[in-house]
Image (cartoon, rainbow, N blue to C red; front, side):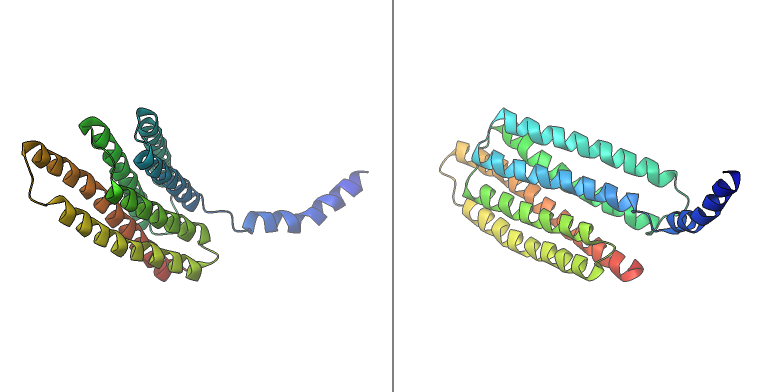
Length: 222
């Protein structure tokens, strides 16, 4: 019995060594994916808000923003406590911050619409739809890393191309907005809507930033 246990112990050594050296999932990429997933859910909630603007839908986005903040706090804490990281530390931190900036702009959009009593229009619905499509591509890009880096790049390019679409939508919204105001109330509405449009425009720019960072990471590390 004793010899059998010793023999089984020796026989299990190769398997234990293999387990120790087997590449483990990158927890930093997992955190980034988790953050991007919450951001995608927030963008979908933004689309719902543009169709049904109410306190419940606004509060849903606020809760998602808080959840994402907690994910980022954990991410930063883990990054600070890890000596060796698979991707450049600065790239990881910048990616996390840029994803967080997207969600901050989404939350600012809904929060200000709610506070300023701005009703959604066709331009806002179109821009919200574009933002959601862009963020979905970002999530797909992160999910393809590191095994399918080329596919990740393709999704990053698609996300960035969506920014061009939203730039056009933003310009059209402004052109439609800055018609000659009929009265003071119309002028006040113009100022309110311009700020809302700007938040969505900035959200799309942050998506493009994330897409560029993903492409940089692929070039440098994969």
